[in-house]
Length: 328
Image 1 (cartoon, rainbow, N blue to C red):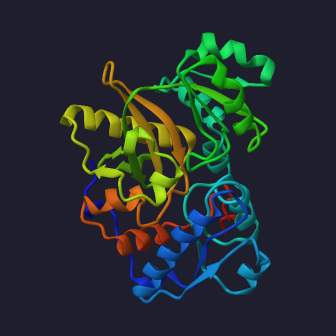
Image 2: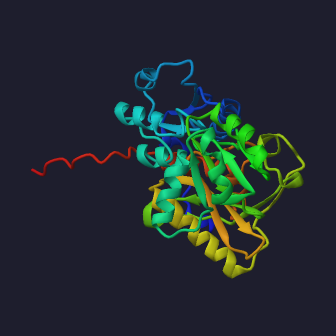
Image 3: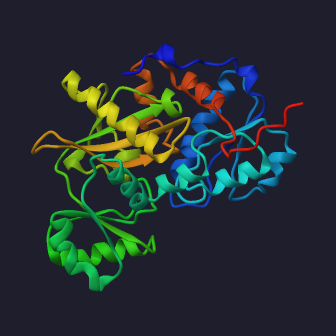
């Protein structure tokens, strides 16, 4: 596992003027505002010239006109975590935190993410894309009951339903279809819920200590994720060293397979049947609220919330491959 010394904390003055992008137009706007305000206060507490910026009400051109040196993306969901804002920042020439256009778009699409992980031989639950209500009988056979029905382009557990019986499929499908034109049915894995924060890019990416999530009745929904004090978090998760190392290795491999950069979080289920870890999804712009998991993992290696924010801010960059300048 990573050590705090692996992450250089920059001189705050070297960051220049920072825009903290928060809010936006997705269904996760409320959470994004909490994340963004936490990041904003952390930067300001260290003397950084940081300013809130909400793309839902401000022109992106004003980022360029405002002389911002970099952007910290604290947007979640559509238009913020799906490559949309990343592409705009590339065009504006403003370095930004986190993954680039392609990795962000793939990470936001749970079907495409699974396809890549399966091609790489990484463990993930069985799944099927549901194309309509006439397709529901198929999922009873594969991936089989019980299963999870979800909109594959949403986050924060929005629109997710656990289905234990065939007569529950139609309302679960309809709930997901209201949020997404695609719907995914995924094998339900009964077991322990784990998450691994990853910092860095390429071969330098490292896993932070694993966090285990113990939600009331095992239901880590929107309320229990962001607002409940009843959810318990164990970090480092109580796991044998060999198992923890293997889960950390898989997390980094999954992160690299998608092409993630800067920072992210990879979610798992650890099967109660055979202690096998199963990849669920990758988050390319994780939460930074008071209940968020990346800051929790960073604290376990001695990295404070403020220093974590500074380190992530320092990693801001443009990701589109530009031609090298001609040599004289």
